[in-house]
Length: 216
Image (tube, one colour):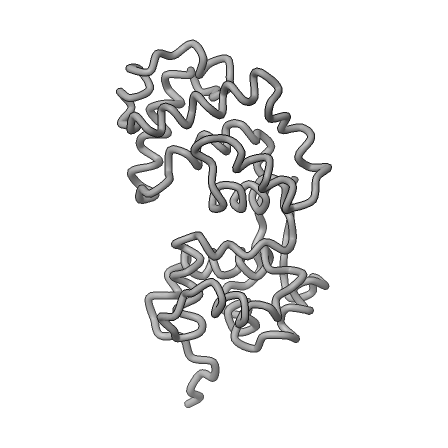
């Protein structure tokens, strides 16, 4: 599913009316278009691999695993690999166990990914975090990037925190502080986060944030 967000989108208009700093970021970023991930299992494997790694390192390891699976990371293709083969991609032993845990949950029906779109956010998190190796961060990434849920605040995500500190000019990234400042984003926290991610990707956070630009 492809989605386009711009200043004429009702949810974006709402966010701009509630947070002048975020409104400035949305102006700087401009229109964004994104597609949701349609393969929940492959997405979770990707997120497990990238936990605690740089994007570059994670992508390299994920690419090697994809090659072993002939381009299709599925429960069946993963099950055909030995632990040694998976570790050979550069994946840690603990992450091999997490990949096995997820694969077993899916193949045995403990986790039925097709049912997750019908569940509330908290219930999705509960189902996913019951699997060893999947925590709050991974579950929230799933809600945002696979299920396209609108009101997820990814306070566990390093990239989000980087943009957050830039936007609000603060080093206080405590859960309480972030929830207090971002409360105004509800019920569209995920949409706000997407603009924050895009600002980071565009390199905007390398320069100090100014709410009001100097006019010459």
